[in-house]
Amino acid sequence: MKQTACELRQVWVSYGKTPALRGVSLQVAQGELLGLFGHNGAGKSTLLRAVLGLVPVQSGEVLVDGVPVQKRDLPRLRQRIGYVPQMLRVDAGTPVSVRDVVMMGQYAQIGWGRLPSQGHKQRADRALEAMGVTHLADKPFGHLSGGEQQRVLLACALAQSPRLLLMDEPTSSVDWQFVRELAGLIREVHEANHLTTIVVSHDAPFLARLCDRVVLMEGGEILGDLPASSLLKRVEQESG
Ligand SMILES: Nc1ncnc2c1ncn2[C@@H]1O[C@H](COP(=O)(O)OP(=O)(O)OP(=O)(O)O)[C@@H](O)[C@H]1O
Ligand SMILES: [Mg+2]
Image (cartoon, rainbow, N blue to C red; front, side, top):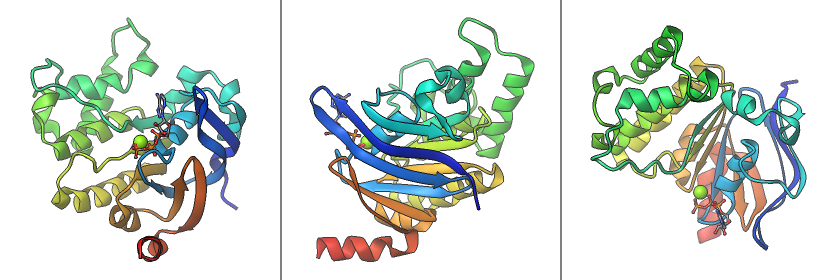
């Protein structure tokens, strides 16, 4: 049987008085490509933040590789997790290059205030190459298209050599043509790097194409857990 890469056991998270996760339990096996589907405010991003230890868990437990997140050295844990957040708005005038963005992913390993080694720079270059964006390395990140930015953010996550990849709404700023390509790209990255991957989206066709399994969330709870191939039918049933 495959080992569990990540698990939530009856997890409650609240912002102020309102619960955003209400007793969520979920197991993600090593090597799995899982989709998290749900409408705005369902709790999807909060679930990812709980895995990263970015929000306090009121009750229940989050485990990564069998060890509770609450008991882990969080900076060290986050080194093992490639996280592509929901929005990274960088103004076109901000002088941050594509290479800077990719290096940023490695600062947890380098340590703030220390200089990156040649090895870190090489890893950044390899990740840029793997994502086909080497030619953009010296451009300001804010000048890139949505699709190019997603490739760079994936490169940033990959440069960390993660075991777990968490992506939050990767299709939100890309055009529909790139959505199809992005599904192929994420799957390639997932397989080539032997990752466990969780992708959050409210784009059902995208998740159906990309994932093995999809978990449905609503109001901070898990409503369903199904093979990705059944997602479109289920969404049609619920809206019809
Ligand atoms: N920092 C915060 N402070 C207060 N409330 C928050 C905060 N972040 C999220 N919430 C609330 O928690 C609930 C879950 O939010 P979350 O961002 O996890 O949803 P989501 O499924 O990712 O939604 P979306 O599809 O819009 O990104 C929402 O009701 C939201 O308003
Ligand atoms: Mg969200």
